[in-house]
Image (tube, rainbow over all chains, first blue to last red; front, side, top):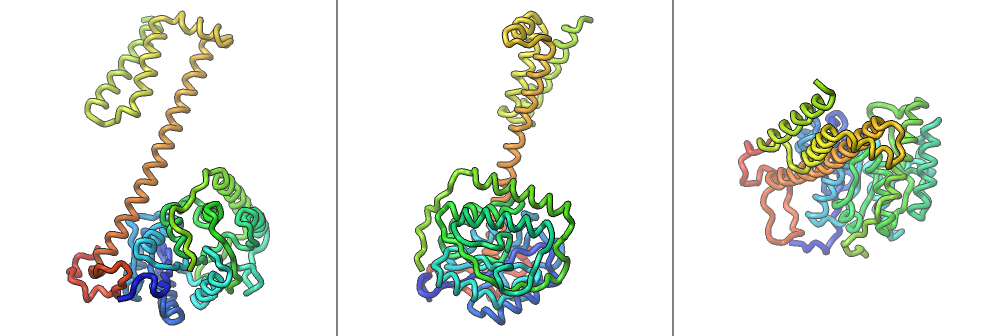
Length: 249
Length: 136
């Protein structure tokens, strides 16, 4: 019978849309490497066995009745974390790209830097993940702008590997955009403007089990335009302030 | 049949259709309002076309018909913007509902918690009192 402040409780949130092939392995790896964490799979309207596999692996499952996108799935996850009183969350992809062993790296960085949000970054000197061509330049521009917004050095703003503390969980449970790039770019803007401390730490990424990032210049251009649009809208929105107290732990 | 008579007949049909849709609650008043306004305006203009000439001279539009077209485009634009904004808020509402449904389903599957909010219960559905058939 522990009080909720006795020990930090960690929830790993995995947004999953038709990820039956890789999800089982990801969850068992988490159970093996991060024993203290609870695992929540947000099944984003999958039409395959994602939900059943997650439950068999012992994870809690939020079954969304239809597909909401990563941002939609994550807000549902943050709502659950907020209502169940978790002190920290880590978002982790279901495709096996993120190494569950790095979860502790994020949490450690959060404690050391006194950060509210820690991004597991791909281009921060660790690992050999690389994106080439126009897409790389788009991501560079995003990084430069968002680094200024967040008043810290960010190199990988589109990473889906993120740790949050209580303050960030409460903010994101109320306001987490479902639009394109809303879950990465815009959420960072929202957090920075709510005076949350954003930091990044380099992590090694693995190859995705399926699919490679596209190198088509047209797609990269479309990505850049949409990213700039999302950024412009996000920056022009009125500020939101968290009513939640800023967690000092 | 004169052009004005044709316009008047058209407006009468539009007003009648809107009235029918409102009466059977197939559209809400907040969406019908602007159309009723448009229909009434067209009826008035159809009956007294001099108003258009006077208005066109007033705002400095050379051809009165162009004023009508411009006004019609602006009205349609306003309606479609209103619909976009209503659609966005509907999507946000359905997103919130989807989240709540998912959270409730998870709560139903897990055994009831004790009074302490931080008391974590292992999420093993075998120990719950709920019948397994309750799962979606």
